[in-house]
Length: 300
Image 1 (cartoon, rainbow, N blue to C red):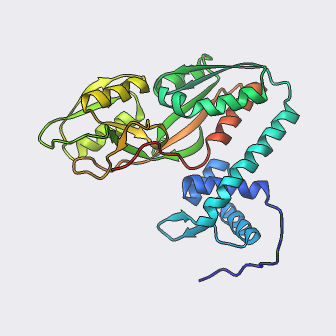
Image 2 (tube, rainbow, N blue to C red):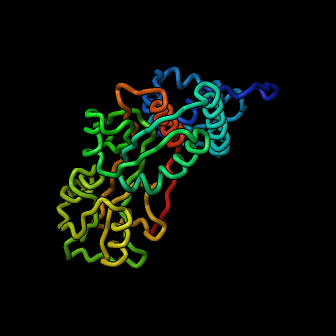
Image 3 (tube, rainbow, N blue to C red):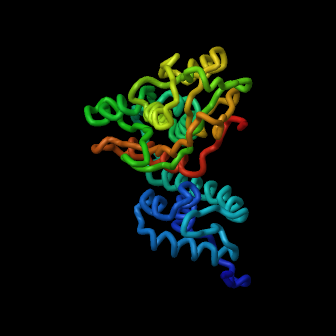
């Protein structure tokens, strides 16, 4: 059934509508999007309908089983992220122009390498009096430091069945290897992973156990640089989030012996006693990391 739009209607894009639109585009699920922005599913659906009336075209194709973004939606998403970033930057500058102080941020090494640099650079440009200090470790080791006062903000990974913190986005997981990788199904799979406690490691090992695939952990390190080097030099295999795959590696999903992997959740945790400058950084991370993940690797 087609939707009739008033093509003569010209209205401004509303910030609240754009926030809901970006959330749905990030999660491709109205319920998850509603949870992420603190609204009801019905409210988000109505906001998307209003936005579609404003632009005069459908933004999402919806069925009972799935939600997909249209070409019009993809085009609007680029501008929506720019508008929201400009809106948030303007309010931040006006309301907290003298933001200053130390903000201690915890993040896994791959997030610190691929996700944080552009965000932290933007924060420093807008708030030069802020001092940002980053500590890298596994999520399970970082989160206790929020409670004991050792960190102010933590960028964390969670399984979708154990979501915590404020959701930034859902991120696909992929099996990755060197470009010339060739699998031997008769041999134990050589894995290169983050240490025990890493969510992605746990998901990968559980997936292999379910199909009775033999494996051994050849390398275990917290450094994404060392993981990349080990994969390239040892014919090992790893599991990585779409946005943290180095360009030198390729996705090998779909091959026999490599089971499908679920998404993970990237979330932001902040101290329960957050000063204004800490809240500013946490809000900035949530805003900038929201949206569709960007893959860095070439598929099979």
